[in-house]
Amino acid sequence: MRIVTRPDFDGIVCAMLLQVAEGDGLPLVWAEPGDMQRGLVDVQSGDIVANLPYHPNCGLWFDHHFSNTPKQPVAGLFEMAPSAAGLIYRYYAGRFGDGYDELIHQTDRIDSADLTEDEVQFPENYPYVLLSMTVNGRERQDAPYWNRLVTLLRDDPIAVVMADDEVARRSRQVVADNRAYRDHLERHTTIQGEVAVTDFRALETTPQGNRFLVYSMYPQSVVQAKIRYNDRDRDRVIVSVGHSIFNRACRVNVGLLLSNYGGGGHAGAGSCSFPREKADDYIPAILESLVRNEPNDPAE
Image 1: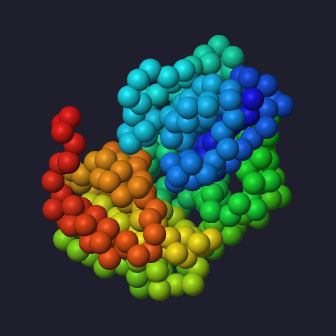
Image 2 (image 1 turned 60 degrees about the vertical axis):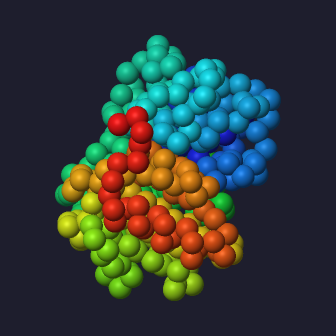
Image 3 (image 1 turned 120 degrees about the vertical axis):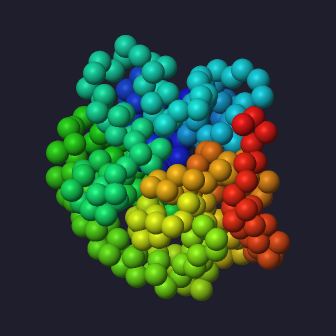
């Protein structure tokens, strides 16, 4: 049995909780949702899958993404919730005590983008927010760092975690990257209706930075569409879409919209990945739906 989860902050907290609940020796497998959807992840019988699409081989599954809503009951817990970690915390209630209450509260806030403008503008003043930004999931060679965070969050209070040499180094880099990211956003973002369209395809490497910053820079926008090439495979395009966390007037269910283009996610945020040759068809269609801003969820 292994833990298969996503290398973002929610996934790291999921991994930590599952190791505490099921055994510290469980190996960790880090995977991306798109790879799971394309059948590229070797999920073995009995594995615990968290914060990723369902796989029939798993023994337990924990997830909260709208686009992954199961068609039949599965072992584990699926629910529309702020974070997958919060679901695991509730599922194994009684195994943790109350030592992780604040961590789960902050994970819920971060994964559901329930942040203040000050937290977005100055994450260096908010340790959990800053820590979450040191995890981007794009560099597979960062797996030792993700594993280290699992151990640190399991054993230490947040002040000790932030004082760790590698965490501190990456935190300083995040602050520097965020300053540069503002300039990249200004150069590569246009406004279409109430949609902030950020297209990084002209850049050799996609810049990294605060994913919420665009909403404070363009307060008139209700949603952002960020377009980039996959840094490991420039024959694939990635489109990430997120509702503004300050101007909450977007009525499009993002996860449902992007499920039409090989992706998925939450009602308020998601992504899709597709071959480069489909970009001229897919991207205008996605942007048209966002600019129109009409509800697309028949359940509403």
